[in-house]
Image 1 (tube, rainbow, N blue to C red):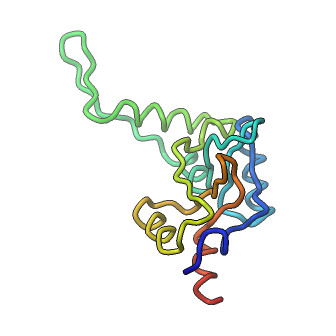
Image 2 (image 1 turned 60 degrees about the vertical axis):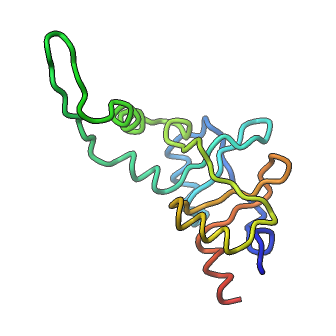
Length: 149
């Protein structure tokens, strides 16, 4: 059975947390890719940012419903979700829009496990780690391409 090391892209394009959002958008378009890992100066994976994160930055801001009772404000929806959306709306760097809880895989992860992770977790890109460092990335296109090879 195929493993991540057999289908992954080895020349990983990455950005750092201070990369401007406009520069990220240009990079994704120029390289025709759907997202990139966010790596710090020590080469440690800090997050991932995708086209979906860029698009959600420009969506309408949904104001949460609140009730005031005596001098208290009670949110009927998640205040945390609203604050995250507000932060993305005002984003100027990758750090503001990236997803920091990244699902990763190892080089030995089977194609079946990769497909299951993508389907169950809703992830489009899975960084491949070796000893904590990114050595590749597997996207949906890699999985589909493996079906015809």
